[in-house]
Length: 326
Ligand code: HPA
Ligand code: ZN
Image (cartoon, rainbow, N blue to C red):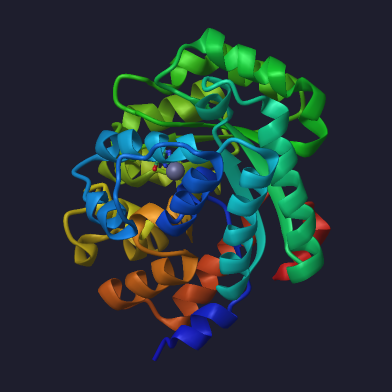
């Protein structure tokens, strides 16, 4: 009895969304043509057919390739504006979106180009949808700590527009401890801290994110459940987990949606939320992620309300704004 209208009508915050992962094939083609960039696909259908992944790295290879069509302020604006329109239709009233500056600066795109395009779309979303938006700068963990420091340095003129730093890309072999110093520096600068951990990496990576990076929020976190002591600790500390069901299925973190642990997370007392991660690549936006979790795991309306409530509690909004959303 959880209808699509109920899901869309539930005010919610999206806390785990890579803006580069919201690049729909149609926009990829339009930007390739506008910018005269070659892409290795003949049609939108061919692009969609290429979106069959067996793990995180498979996806990342194609995701970084897709981002090559993004060159100008207008491109980043159009990318983000399309996401905000879709998110608003799904009942998102607040979004904390991640971007990967190194994916662009390593191609010669200025940091300012990226953030100016995102900023103008954010202002438009505030005006058009009444949506509030915060930006999370993610470091690519397959690159070294010096590169992360250089990125934080490039962000210095824009720190008033950035709420948090995060850690994404290839998890295995790139443990959180690799970024201990740059996260400490970000914290010193007053930024909030998030990190992907326990998506493919072991529970020890989650422990490192907590004890070495001192994260304020955990992205994914699925593999925490393998460790009862860690699970109990996350529950006790009220740590928010930004869970992404369709991503978990497409990247084979779960083999079948019927095995997804979202309801187990709630039962274990974890502050779990539902998010879309890379919706253009994984088959749907936040509403579709709620839908699949409801259908596969029998979530009730009350569960959905808890997940949506958790999204505000886990957000970086000030306490008064959180209270106003509850
Ligand atoms: N994991 C790691 N890096 C990413 C992801 C993800 O799910 N999406 C985009 N970059
Ligand atoms: Zn992610």
